[in-house]
Image (cartoon, rainbow over all chains, first blue to last red; front, top):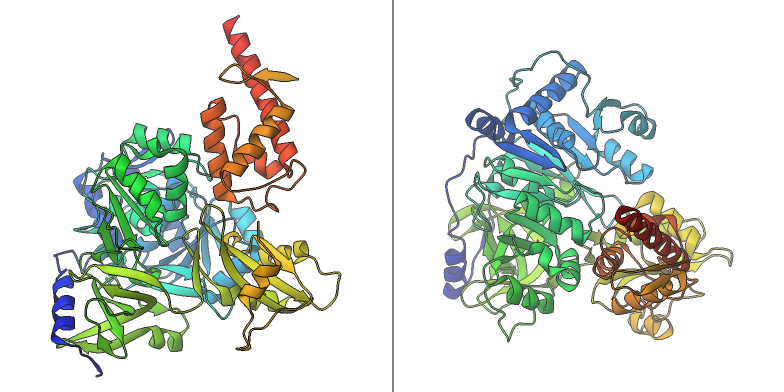
Length: 522
Length: 97
């Protein structure tokens, strides 16, 4: 096996930051840990949703009903089950039910365009679907067995189904943007989820934890938001509306006593600017998804005090969080906020040219440990390319190459610099510019296209597409409508500019500066 | 039709539009009354910001995401805002009598 070596200084710093092993129930699947809490604390509050309160017992009852519906309908262990619904207690019960049956859930937002929904179902070979609105979803997904999340009505409580599920079984699939136009389905095993939420060092997660579930169910922050409380006997508070209002956020946070929440940096910036009081009572505010704005973090630090704000970093392939940095001060000589140290049971390496980098040297961040995904479903080549095996410091490691450029400070704190490819983040979502170009170039009226990003007046990144059509009748609205049929809303460029040609730089690449000299985006 | 806002100032459709244009400018969106909110660069995060500003200025729940979904131009959004301010005020008046 190939070895990752390095200078004594490089080896020493990596050794120091990677002493992260803490005990966790590594052989128990997610739903068994949940069922353990059900037996221990049946009347404790599992889920709060508006006026509704569900105890662990009643949530487990809903999940067992749905599990028996799925089994009666022919679902088998190893099957992928799409769950199509907005936030609700039934959705959470649906996820638990799929796991109880030995299946992997595929969380889908009802707002996905039809083409993406069908592609996701085809790609994952999913036969069963749990849906809040089964009739509507059945018409969008012909040929699939669509069961209602509300259940089919059972008499009396059902026992926990006894399906043998191992810790390496896939618990869920999450789609991330793929540069070839085909989204990649990341396969996350049970053990990776358990590793994320048990004995956590980035936030206190125990039976007093009250965690807000505000992210999209299709975004892997929801893994933390749901299983963080539910595998520790705490309470998961479902944000009650589809759309976030700062006044409602404040009301929900204070009335339910939220102790921990994860926010994408874009939403965090909005709250800090417009209504910072909404988070005054929250003990741990995790922020991530994309690079943090130092100005907003400084303002938040002043308001909430040191230790409450945590920069959380992690790709879907390492199950939600891989590194964390509790913000205690703003280091004046750093332009970016560090992403900190690896979380529990997670290891991080800065690698360049098959060598570990010493502090100060830039390399690619590689991650290891039980949080790693099993790979990309149906993409063995891509999986082999991104998940590699190396001997590191005498130990055999399976590693995920993040594509994130980074370096270590002298104490081992990781600093994130940017991407080594075309992947960008829009409102916390991963977007491959290549995926957008792929769909643009398939439009019959598009001759040539170029997709890039700009920062708007508030410093938020926005997508801009420049399109050269075959003929003059092709307008931005038609292009936008076409993209909306294939891409999630966040990946549809806010600005689409129709042009006669794309200026080229001497390198032969599209000249970004010349484009923006002629066009100043709003 | 004119209404009174939280601080006692008259708010009619034109004043609501002026407020909305100014609030949009504060969040970096330069936008005219007859312009489409999304074409001018508005997105879901700008809506979160504008609603927070409306809550602070007029009190809760007069500006909601529905206004942005169901209306297209800034003028239409402002007209709906002014209407809602009006009915909120009438309800308050009924409550007092």
